[in-house]
Image 1 (spheres, helix red, strand yellow):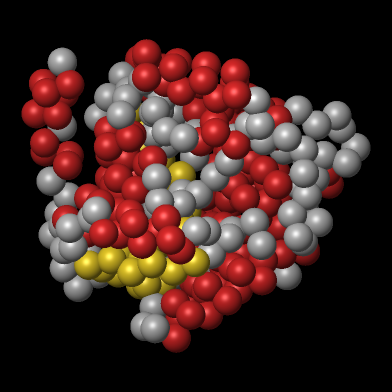
Image 2 (cartoon, rainbow, N blue to C red):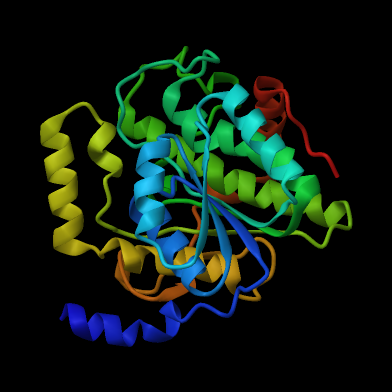
Length: 300
């Protein structure tokens, strides 16, 4: 079955020629991020592997055929994000930024900036990175979401779970809803500014990756990994919607996911969005709150 699936996916794995283009992929040391970087480099792109652990990034880079560069960034640390963005701008800019790094089901904790870790990693860090890089971007921003956004509730006045009882998976769902709200609002702002840049998004369906490994609960980690392997896809398959959103000529605000039932697995196709992810007022309020927290704003 795996061989047959690989054969059927060959057309999607044949990413259009990307010579002369530079991509940044956050969370590129494993899972969907790694497979996205691998496919892009194989298509001729220069790929910046944006990772927290340089040694791990260097090991991964050695396994990828093509042009890669390892740069360190912790998206949960705004000082790290600022330094990373400044280095990219100085080194010649970027064609495509793929905001992929994320955490799922982690125990409550705060980052060095005082933010709750899930929202900081999955939304605020990428929000800041995007705004800092927009003047140096040449093509698009890709937001990696999740089906979990359907269960998310975003309260712009309580992004840090200070007024509500913290629940790890509710926090994850909220952060993924924030990703979709960010996608729509970013495209609205780009359009209003007359920019040729675009924002696109994708989700990997049910894909076997190490994202549950940070839960702090070995049982949750094992069950999560087993479940994805049972009903879902391998990481290279989960990367296909992301590659589609990153390289195909699609309009801004496009959102892609697997075509199969429940968008759990399959080949890239238009993905459904929860009604709350399409609320422009909520998206605007989230954007304004994110600007306050990160000290960054739309620069165009």
